[in-house]
Image (tube, rainbow, N blue to C red; front, top):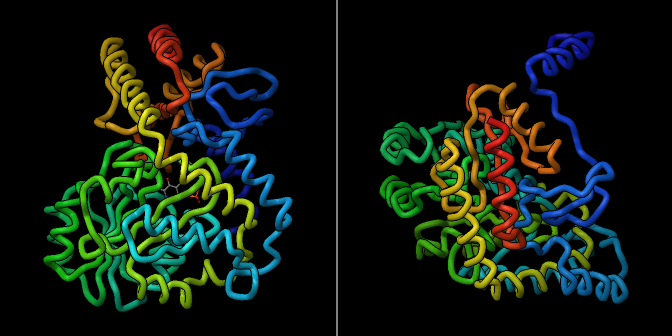
Length: 384
Ligand SMILES: *Cc1c(COP(=O)(O)O)cnc(C)c1O
């Protein structure tokens, strides 16, 4: 945009390319059957993988905490907004990840920006997977570090780029890729990074709660310690059902981030009741083995069904199950057809995903039933 007068033209162009995004209005709690624009829908698009967003125990914890300490934190963490609930949550999250310490941020976006900008500067190099989440790309921009990007999950390409990197080297990847659902090859990646004296930062927003023992995420599932993967980021607005995010690592690095991560320092602490609710959520996440097993069974049913109707899903063992359609228009058409039948499946289009790979992004929750998967499969078959 060279001039503000181009704004209407750019907006029209978006619409003509079938890229205009529209929000829907949720009029009920988040669930697999939300009320949207006055209509009850069957939803396959939230990140509420364990159905905790409207869990009564978590809601009760939040209410109790509000009675005990009100709503607003009233200040940033380093002034006097850091409540005992935040403190306890950080300790519990660190233990959950098998790390010495953790720091809780207001959002995952802010955690990524804050960590990368605190650790890296102009002399350094951030090496990222091509399909990393936007917040990681923006984190590298904020850090003003050099940025190199390797082909998706290609550790050979990563090794090649690491030989060109200068200064401190930070390898950054999504754990579970948010638009593809596949996992980063963590063990190989950590080994290649280690050979080049680089640190590894994993954003496992979609792995926590879903993968690993007790839902401790991809890094834990792969048995990788702080010496392999120095920093693990998790978000609390997905499987945890609340809001916020955390970074976990060794004590010294977390101490450093507390002093230097600007998106942690210069912002109001989240309401303490959210931290209290998240502590309850963490307890439920750890105990959710039955829900995780059901989720895996749903994933298997969906994948078999999709292949049977000629819509093969991408390679993914997570609740993120995208089906690549190709053209923006066709993806939108299928999504609209499903919508007319009361099914909510989002069409994800560029620039969120590469040009020509518009897709239906189906996400599953442990609160879905097998019958609901079959309803989706039938509607998808009819939309062909
Ligand atoms: C959702 C997401 C984020 C952002 O987290 P918020 O808490 O929603 O800001 C960051 N990284 C990845 C991979 C995500 O999927």
